[in-house]
Image (cartoon, rainbow, N blue to C red; front, side, top):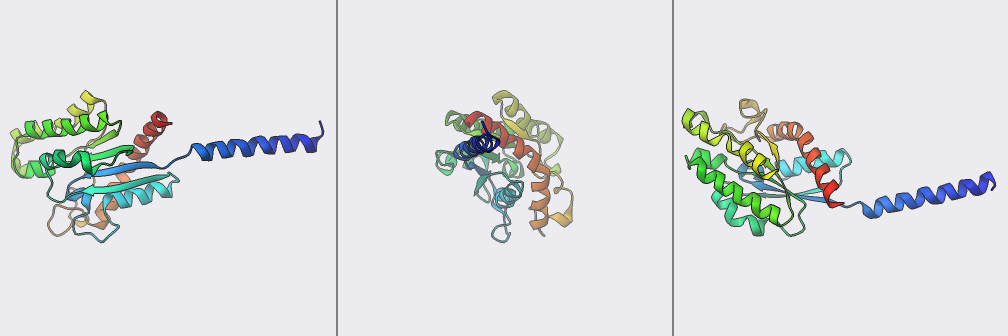
Length: 214
């Protein structure tokens, strides 16, 4: 076989492999499901966490689409009531971020845990992967409340075998410059910090979805 013919065969094989990879490639669809921290409270359009995260992941070359299903003021009870219709069929994964408003309102942590667990179970029954974004009780709720509330995320992640990001507001909660004037919600820069800190965990999460789905 001549070098020219051999080269042609190699080119055909490489082209076939590239077409195969392209054919098998698909967009990973995620839903950011949560409260005002997810919704992008008082931020300009496109500055919410799901939108900023999608842009960051695409910049890394990941083919991902992230829908924003955040509702300001939502509690775990409200989330449970809308989880089935807010997360479309065919969704690959959900970033589940709820519980901050439960803690602010002093809702019994046991109730929050039960609601979060039911959401996790429902999503898994639909074949949807879950990354649980943890929250911490505000200091004014006292040590006893925090001792009951703070561990529920790790407990649920271990029990149901889902990915866990321990604290959604990591890097922002104690920095006033990264929050709005209300002292609670992240500003645009704060969201960027959150995305930067959480991006590795999300990338790993997407990798587990790709492995299972493909």
